[in-house]
Amino acid sequence: MNRNDGLHIQIIAFALLTSVLTALANLLVENWFGINVFSFGLWFILPVGAVIVGMGGASGGFLACKYFNIKPNWLDALALAVIAAFTMYLIYYLGYITLLLEDGSKASDLVDFGTYLDVIVTKSHMRIGRALQNDTGEVGNFGYLLLAIKFVGVLLGGFAIFANLKSLAMCEKCGVYYKKIASKETSHATTNDAQAVYEKMNSGSIDDYKEALQTTAKGDCEAKIKFTLMRCPKCKDEYISEEFFVKGKDKNFVAVAGLTGKTNIPKDSDFQPLFQK
Image (cartoon, rainbow, N blue to C red; front, side, top):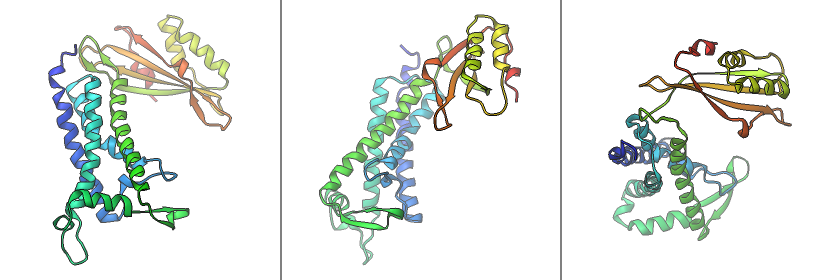
């Protein structure tokens, strides 16, 4: 059991705060610039804006975990997803209570929230084409499918925050997250050259590893390695994470997941100077 289990309530408190702030920010951006970030989508149905809003709403949970050094569990994942969905509700509710009609009257004085939501969902228009210049008209009941897609989007955004937290390394002895100290990339003319460096990195020799860390090529290269030096803020335990990339057919580098690694650094070894540019 994590020794900070009693602090998990902080995840909910911080996430609720960022949920409200995200909903308010969406409202202000729409009022000032006419852009509803939450409604932004690609190819009609990909809820990019909803995912962003879900991540923003749950981002307080990330801050709480980092600040209080809490390793999130699956109950935290559920809480972050619920709060992300709550952010979606807030966006619609804030739109409801702030909407003014042409005569200056408030929409909330004339209709209930359910009626307002039905109108917003079914009477909205979908625009397609370059610069979204073609109006397809009212979406009708199809709007509820779009609403469901947005709901899934905010849940995915909330879960993305949890997945990010779960991927962060924590010092088991101290119960705190490792801190990134430095990073560098080395280039290699061919994949065979990168393979030779990989073998040195895994030879078990500190001297070989240091040599591998400093081996790099210039010009057009087929492979590269990213090294990241991580350190525990308390006990100063260190490790280096390694990520390998090769150039694909489109000339862009893609990660080689099977070669991702981690090397623990002995206490008496000073690797930080090797990361200097």
